[in-house]
Each structure stands twice: as structure tokens, then as C-alpha cells.
Amino acid sequence: MNEAERFLARHAELSRRFFLRAGVTSVAAGWSLTQAHGEPLPPDLEKAIAKLETYFTTQEDFRDVSRGKPVPHSLPADKKKEVGLTRETWKLEVIADPDKPAKLGKQFTKKDGNALDFEGLLKLGERHAVRFAKVMTCLNIGCPLGTGIWEGVPLREVLWRTEPKENLRRVFYHGYHNDDPKQLFRSSLPVGRVLEDPEDLPPVILCYKLNGEFLTPQRGAPVRVVVPEAYGFKSIKWLTQISLSNLAFANDTYIDGNNDVDSALKTFAATLSVPINKPKQPIPITGYAQVGISGLTKVQVWVQPKGKGWPADDPYFTQAPWVDGTILGPPEKWGGKLAQDAVPADTLGFDVKGQPKTWPMRLSKAHWAALLPGLEAGEYTLRCRTIDAKGKAQPMPRPFKKSGRCDIEEVALIVRA
Image 1 (cartoon, one colour):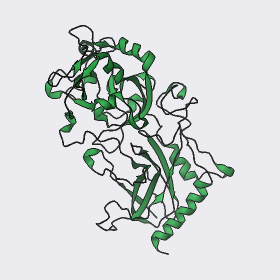
Image 2: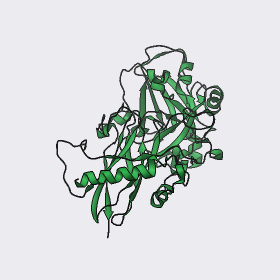
Image 3: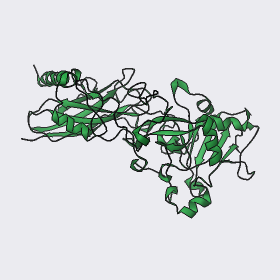
Image 4: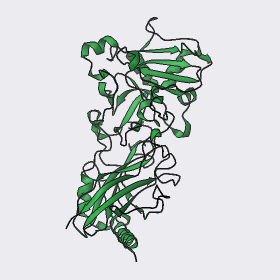
């Protein structure tokens, strides 16, 4: 039996003893770990899981990649009021694109005094509001910014109020950026995605709440767009105008920089905790997985001695001796400062008891853990990857960086005598 085979055999024994019979579900410090047959949890793994982040992210703990000089959320209170970045002064214009106009029965403008205000949006929300869980990720950053329950009115409810007739192929929208054309940040969607929700996706929404609370300025208040399956650049903050266009293609600001503006969220895994261990002691590893449009069935890990080569004709390590980690189940405590730590009623994807209908949830995240067998003293490289719902191993089927990061992560694993 060679080194790789011995490692796999030891890992299989640990998995059998600590996970398959133990029945890992959700875990400590917001998570919980249930054990079948009363078997005790390995202390090292329990400690590692207890340190995991909460499932949902508080508004203040979201990472921020806002654009603008100055960033709009940093404006003084009186300036925010002046330019419509407060709930009391917000106005949304919905117009025909001046260059490629759709034929509309109505337009909503500040000039005509009929732009949609915040009170009007909430009124629509009384009948049409939806909420859903989503991980927010930047296309060009290799980790999520945060995960929350986003709430708002489907964009189509506002679109229909313009009484569109014909020549409507694309919906453009942008937010406030200092009244400076050079800072304009715009995104767009085909009108079909706004009017319909394919593959059981939630609708595109005009969002005004996150985790049950009104958006903060940092999160795009008063109103932002949220596109469930998309990267963050499609979910424009500080929304001020929607243009309905007959243009047949995207002209998003994010086209600059060679970005793929039609790419949906990818599935990928990363580590959160990799300890420095002593020789021959089991090694507890934890991490998270972004669950993209293609779903998630497995997270796998592989340990290789540092500096050991790999055949150039297998750049994605498809022939490596990967071993399965354990995807943790739904947490007992959701976090995110949800009221009573309960998922709001009627959140899409959750049942009447506030539990997920499926797990892991698409377009959100999951946490995982693995207890690796002990190793000899030395330096190693730890890699992790996902297997999606169609059996595709990361980084496939879309390995290109400009369509969203999903590289197979490599981290140092050190064993010291």
C-alpha cells in the first residue's frame, strides 16, 4: 500500500467513525452537532466547528466593495437627503431608453411628479413582497461578501405599470453616483428574466430590506436591485433610474475590464480553519462552499507534500486522490440579527417552520468540515473542491476568472514535531 492509499484508508476510517455513524447535522456557536448512539464528538473537530461564522451575515459585517468618489453611503446626511438617498426623499424614474426606446404607455419621472417613492414601493410590497436567501459575491473577488435574506418587490410589478407595448428587449438600471457621468455604474437584464423566473429562481427585486431590517446606506439604501443568481455587479445599489430599451445586447458598465456580464454564480469551496498540528494527530479542517446555480453535492479535500509536482496535462487535479468532507446541515442559530433568530415567514425556499426545503440551498452557502488522519512532520499543501449537482468537479464547467472566481484553493498545512 502506497502513501496515498494509506492516507485514504485512514481518512475512510475517521469518516466512518466520526461522521457516517455520528450523523453530522448542524454545529456549535450558532451551529449544533448531533451524535447518534451517544458517541462523543472528537474534541478537535468540535472546537473547530464552534469557531465557524454564523450562517447569515449582519449588515455591518458584510464586506464592502462600493464604488464612487466619494462612495455614496459616506455622504453627509443633508447631502443624502438632497440627492434622494433617504427613505423620505427617494424617487425612482422608470423611462423609455432615449437612444433605443421601448414603446410604453406611461413613464414615471421626477419632472412629471409621478416617480415612484418609497412609500409607494412599500405599498406595492403589501401585496407583492418576496424574500429569499442569497450570497452576495463580487465577480472578481474569490470570496463572498456576505449572506442574507433579501426582501423587496419584484421588478416586474413596476415594469408592468409602464404599460409596455412593444420594442422592449432589455432593462437597464443605475444608481446614484455623485451626479458625475464618469462615475455612472449601470447593469442590465434581458426583459424575459425580469418578467419570468426560470429554473425555480426567485424574482429580480427592488430590495429595501436585509435580514428583516431596512437596508443601511452601506448595503445600498434606500433601494437596490437584487438579482438572485447573479454576481454583485448586477445588484446595483442606491437605485435611481430604470430604462426600458429595445437594445438587443448588454451595455453594462462591467463590460469594461473584459468581464463576463452574463455569468451566474459558480459553485466553489474554500477553507476557513487549517491548524498547525503535531505529528500523527487527526487534523480538523473547516470551510465554506458557495452554492452556485449548479448546486452542490460534495466538498472534497486532498493533502499533498509541499512542492510535489503534478502532471501538466491534468491542471484541475481530476486524477488526484480526493476524499469527501462533510457538508454541515442547517444551523440551529441562523445569525444575521434576525428577529428572534427566526427566518421570516414566507421566505422562499423555507417551510412554515422556517426550515430549508432543500439543503444545501442554491445561490447561498454551506459550511463543511473534515477530520484528516495524522501526518508525519513536514509541510503540505491542502486543496479543496466542490462537486456540483450534475457531478461536475470545480472549477468546471466555467473555469474562466472573468466569469467569476472558482480556482481550486491551495493552503499551507504544517505539521510540527
